Length: 316
Image (tube, rainbow, N blue to C red; front, side):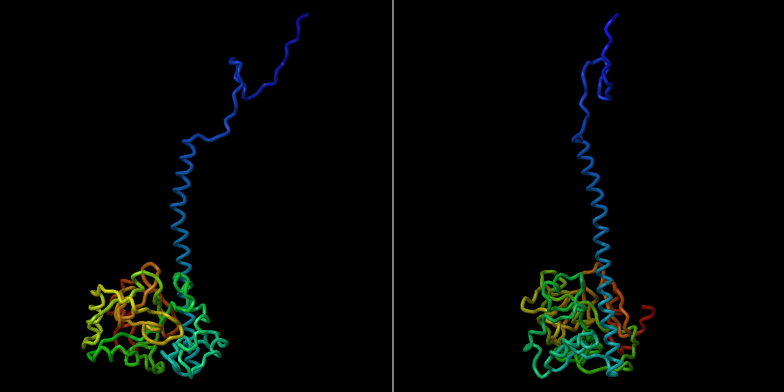
């Protein structure tokens, strides 16, 4: 009788005929790792810009919603008082202070002492309503007393001396020192700007800088002043804009339509602007809000800034 042969269990890793048992491979090769990293990098390069674009689009929509709220608050103010809000109240308090009750901020409004200067009440600075801060602008969150929006006081096309022309109570906008009724806005409520974005000081972005014009007291119309501003190459380091949301003057809570969106600002040119790609948001006197491109025609832009210029704007 012969011995019975021992039967060994078969293994998928067993190499027949070699007498050796292969070790299963458990790691990636260098080439495979490099390929995987390249694929992940490519996906990230494709996805991240789309995510960032979607986030900015959302911030832009929220910013436009803020302006729409300002427009609707102005409509409520009009219903209560029969006039639009004006540029200043009491001791140089801004249009936004006057709008506080219509922005559901009566508790803040009750703390305002209109018999004193706005500068004498710094406790109000940090009570800035959230609706005044655009989510796309980091400066207004770093300095929670600066506004993202300014009121429209028009544009200057006058032959009077410039130091008189720049006084916003003589301008042709809507947010000026006297109260206006709807019939004062003869160009149409839907075609006349009320509020718009404006970038306050706070970093080195050129859109925030104030440029010098050495001949600001010369007799010159607004169009010539615009040309002077565009060619200025000296920054006024002592000037700032949008310093405090409670303060009324031009450049602080008021902007003009001398130059198109996101152009330069100078000593007496207070241009609207934003960090949104390609333009900025504008609220109109009818309570609507729209995005206006940087490439808007300069004449059309000036027409949108006047309340009674008689311009033909068409289907804007």
